[in-house]
Image 1 (cartoon, rainbow, N blue to C red):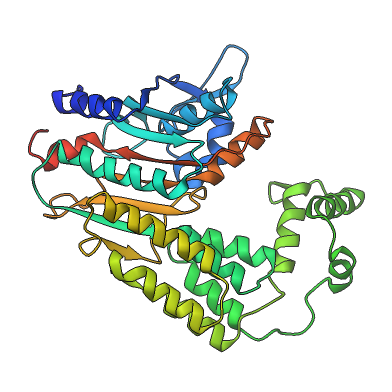
Image 2: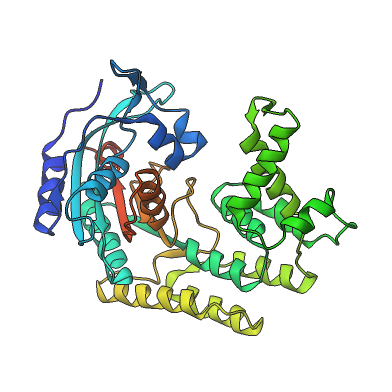
Length: 378
């Protein structure tokens, strides 16, 4: 049975309100297709689904971020900066556990002072966690933007950049694809004539052409996939056969991805590698340096925090800062607080909703039940 909100949960809500975050109360039911397109396969399998009287598929909200962002984008002040807080039930299938549980969190939308907004979220995450426990807390930091800046600086084809971005967020795939990328080319790719004709074409036009060719051939589905899906897969796999990394470039990638150190030492270590390899990564590294300085100014001990260049999250929409707060005593292995910058989520959602708005976004979620357990107040 879902745990009732405690006095500490209500104190957390009050703390967030005092910090300038407006309480958001989004609907419990949201469009299932929108959620599936945003959260990835792993989360999509954990949705609780239903439908309305008109047959539209809905799901119970698996988190607050999606409905809070949707309400903001569709509202009259979507172009303005806003700060939202929430506290209440979310719904995910969790084997052996209650599928309904309480979650608190914050979303900072539209802030153009990116690093200041990020530092504010991390500092408030630590302050909120401290309401529940006096025990040791550890802060883990990462930055998806550093990896993407590395990939862009290597001059890889767009298909490889997209592939490696997905790999970074999904454990176990990155090493294999880096090895594949470093292998020597094995002659001309299959269907080289068609690929040469499509080279330089607009990606949408190329997909449309391949889809039309399949349709002309009478192919509408292959293995349950539509012609459009098959066309997308063909173009991606063909593009992945082009380009490559030299042994020297691969060594630089592996060296950068091996950084796992205290946060105070991370930025100079990354900058040294980038400069030594003449990689144009200064903008991303400068952002990291500004954020770390603002965290230090907020009283956060960077020497006690960890930074890993391999630290990502298992969804595709994080674009910069990622962080987690953990129980330093080790009684709870899962994160107590977690979040980061998710500009890609707002971009994808705006596109799905037919909106042109581009909204910077950063936030975090508090796992209040884990926090209560760590503090001995469950």
